[in-house]
Length: 125
Image 1 (cartoon, rainbow, N blue to C red):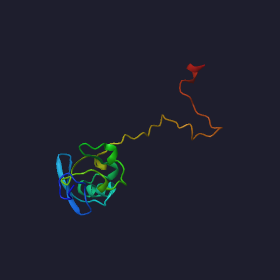
Image 2: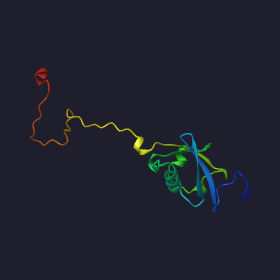
Image 3: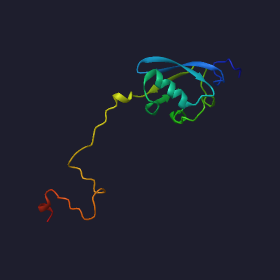
């Protein structure tokens, strides 16, 4: 195929692609000798979504192909008019439920001779 055709793989030269995320479209610079990890870092600069929180989707390409950050962009069958969809959340928006309950005792941290009060022990006798 000719290098300028719309179905060719991405070459060594720089191109622009678009990333759609959260209802907005972002333009990102692409180069065939870049890795997916480098692309994710550029996307992070535009969207503030950390690379570890990004999942990239491309039509007719399995998501597992876009999971390895070491893969070269030139090895993927991207069209010259690249349009990716990203799924991801900004780290500040991620809600983590803390598990700091005084009722939970980690028995791996107890010593051999340490005694633990058992609630409702009289019911077990």
